[in-house]
Length: 163
Image 1 (tube, rainbow, N blue to C red):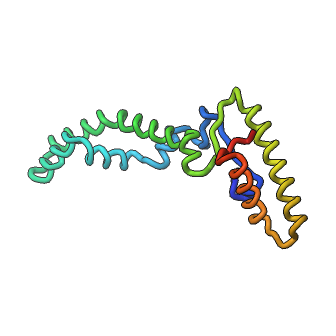
Image 2: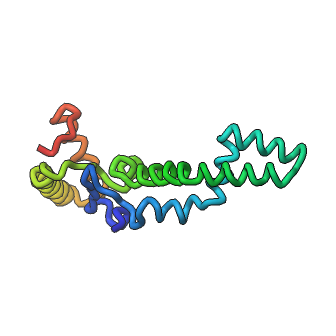
């Protein structure tokens, strides 16, 4: 569902514990952060691998190559686990809100009350906008929305509560 289709009407919300992606974190890691990229990250971050890389540059040998391979195999599960956690964090409600995919994250047990007040406010706002545009036929929809929003902020003292 894309909230950009009709942003004046469409609002997206998610439970605080929900996930937004279609893939499990392990699937995202396999698609977006492949083993070769994790190996490259290991060589950039792990001091022992950096030393082994230096040894390989100065005096290449099969023994050093095997040590590098053994170290990579030892670190691979750890880096995969960290990558999965990272992918999972990017799929949670907080991140979805940060990128604008949802308007707010909610607690499931209070969502019915939240949506009652949100719908009530939305219907009243739309009624005000309709009345404004009926009174001034030259007023555009965005201008009427901005006027109503300004009135609400002024009346509520800056509070954005739906109640």
